[in-house]
Image (cartoon, rainbow, N blue to C red; front, top):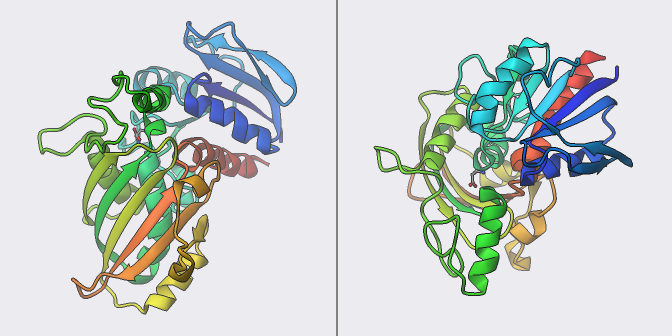
Amino acid sequence: KKINLAIVGASGMVGRTFLKVLEEKNLPIENFYVFASKRSAGQTITFKGNDYVIEELTENSFDRGIDIALFSAGGDISLKFAPIAASKGCVVIDNSSAWRMDPEVPLVVPEVNPEDIFKHKGIIANPNCSTIQAVVAIKPLHEKYKVKRIVYSTYQAVSGAGMAGWTDLEEGIKGNAPAKFPHPIFNNCLPHIDVFLENGYTKEEMKMIKETRKILHDDEMKITATAVRVPVFNCHSESVNLEFEKSFELEELKEVLKNAPGVILQDNLANNEYPLPTVADDHDEVYVGRIRRDESVDNGVNMWVVADNIRKGAASNTIQIAEVLINAMK
Ligand code: 2RA
């Protein structure tokens, strides 16, 4: 069955990556529409050899029988337009945080909780990039050893803050002041991603905590997080510490990860082999390494998890969800 597909927010970093990833794939697209703000409307983009004029997003944009719409246009746009699109029979896969914690909206990583996709009522939420890569690595271990507690420490690329973040690093290298970040990001680490909340955590840290619990369907799971912006252009790196209910053999645990969907194991210390942003860049897999027992608890493990936050963390995960929907439409 061929589908009518729309992109909402085509001019942003994720929107442009939607186009790039869709070019790599062969989804059965009948009609293709590209929407953005008034500012970007009128520009032409080329997709699969055809030119498309970016249209301004309006309340009538979804009156033309669009089957699936990929959103990456910020929370305000999603709050307003995702329900409109859904009311017209379009399934929205939204990258903003607007709908992620809504109980009526599935929050999905296809390798982790694909069964949640078909619980949608018109809107499916794509998790935060730092959550996606973590749960791809955690899920297979959770299934076998039952995760009791997680300690996240993240080292997040500037691309997570879009082109503004990228520019701050480029300009920072030249000694120019940042426009997006609260302090210079070059030669620095900022323990401040998104805004600070009453409890002293940032929104980014609370997203990782709440989204992990929702995706793994375990509201009691003990989780804490520290999210840090580092001077890396693209790809998020994360130290993930897990404590399990059950005991494990380290070699067996590594084998579980080696065979896990969406995971590439890179863990050979003799060869200085471990996940790197420069290797994960422009790929869709989640790279896992530095796997070692946490001797400070009974059943604990440390691992290092790296992925492309714009691809697997946003655009590719969204398109993977769309592929599951399309395959079910046949
Ligand atoms: C960041 N994960 O890295 C957040 C939003 N993309 O800034």
